[in-house]
Length: 146
Image (cartoon, rainbow, N blue to C red):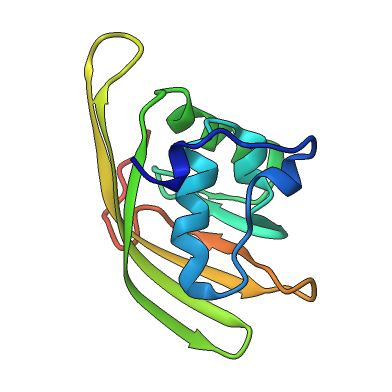
């Protein structure tokens, strides 16, 4: 279907999954890394001090916890679809508003429909790559306690 379905080559994770060099490339990079099914591929896209906003509205800063949150969606084995609605850039910071969905039949045979409009913040690092500072997948949605 697209470049995201092609097998990856290379021995090192950081060489196998691209990080964006422009804020407009964040969504394509996210899709590639999420659709690899590997939480390690996802985690390279986060700054060390990144904040992940959980579905229940909790702020998660520990990378082990962030990985566990991401693993829940990755374990569905379903592709992520996402499209940027807005990319606003101020120097080395960018806000990305994107619409996303995960649809299909989960591993338990039940229909899965997840989605929303994310409001994420990324930063341009000294190495030239853009990484998540705030990952807020449900954007302005009202959060219900888990």
